[in-house]
Length: 178
Image (tube, rainbow, N blue to C red; front, side):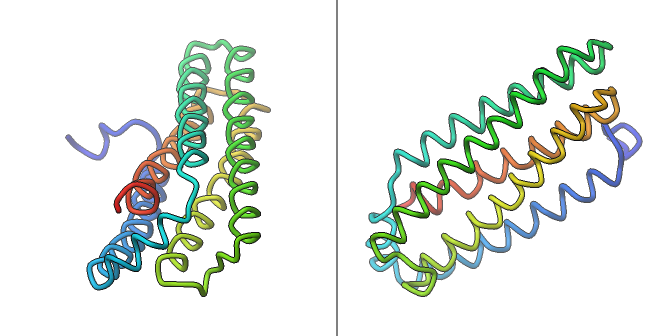
């Protein structure tokens, strides 16, 4: 496969790959620290609410489906359907953020802070940085919905799928691996 064969703009691919590398670095450092203190990481991880993580996963995957539908509709010139799907994807992002806020508020109420342990430092860094990307993605989706052109729809969907992928990558080390 040649670079010219990639869908979308090269600059979008550079952005996506660079963002994935940043998250991969954070996951790698977190995993290395986990190897040094598996008991401490497991104890800290046990304090998290996996149900909220599961619900947020469903929300993001559903939102990603809406983004894919929007991309297809925009490519077929169906601007109204593309707008609706983009708005639904953005609403999924907003729902994710609302649920993440509920999780953070609950964590704070139980005294879980970034300084509490190395696990929680990375928990807040990775999920917070991801939430920042969700905010950016919601803004991008809404801007793209305003125009609903095929090229913009593709770029917006590509960014949103990167946001989904990052969540799938940070989910196991934060919520599942014990």
